[in-house]
Image (tube, rainbow, N blue to C red):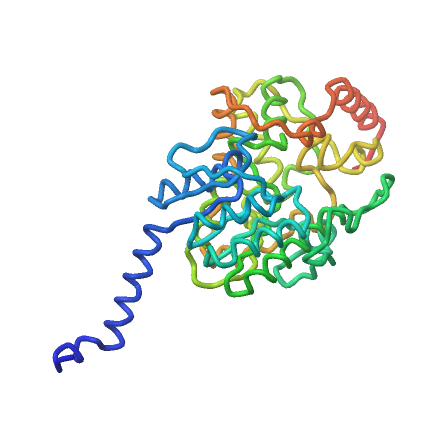
Length: 379
């Protein structure tokens, strides 16, 4: 090495070169999406392609068409032979796992172990249900997680059919799955994303589509609680972008992927639904106490309505500092309505049948509330 070359290789020059290399890696990232054909998985694949990344998807080919431009890999993630075949198609810079909602921790652990030598990082989409305190308590990433071992099977934590408490079964399963990823990839190579409610085009649960169809129908719309109630849904496209940002990052960690507290309210959300659908209806706000007394099922009969203190009190500053940007909820509402108008159909899912109040019951509740209000009912 000459003296002039030695002079050029100063720490500042080395730093610039490192940044160029990292930037180059980012621009041509190679990722594997577990799933990749519907809702969040599809949004991840589409966003990665938009960034110019090389994308492989792994699924059974049953839930929806492949995103044009991906390398589709077929297989069942519960089959060891299929996972071994999958790993032979690597290496990848990162795995983004969006398809393990029904998979027990043991299944996540098996898959993560199979990909340990084929990928640098593992981005796992978990849920705020993994916290012991959800939905009763305010949450941060430091809040206690539910129990759930990394090798638990689908029977771990099952609750009696008449259980009327928190959904600990699902949360335990997801907490165990997080531990499975950490066991296989370690803390530095693992990213754990904990969204709350994800909305947007392609939504299969049916929360926002139900409210949009209800607003389209018009008339008096039963609006639950207070219009000023803060809510924290996040757009599926923003979750996808953040997942990919973390796939390209150099550190691991856990993040609450929810909109900032105070960015949106229930009133603003329902107003946006009316705006998108042509103002055919008007909102009639009914207090929480009346709805609870009437036995209305929280979270399902009136989607997004829940009175627990912590359900919409989830800190997301850590994710925001790492680059999470949440678009206005009205944009999510409008995009979802345009998707529905364009013939968009979600993947069939049993959870969609749970959402929405029966029209005659809604009308009856409004009439009963009117009668109670005129007789001096207090909220």
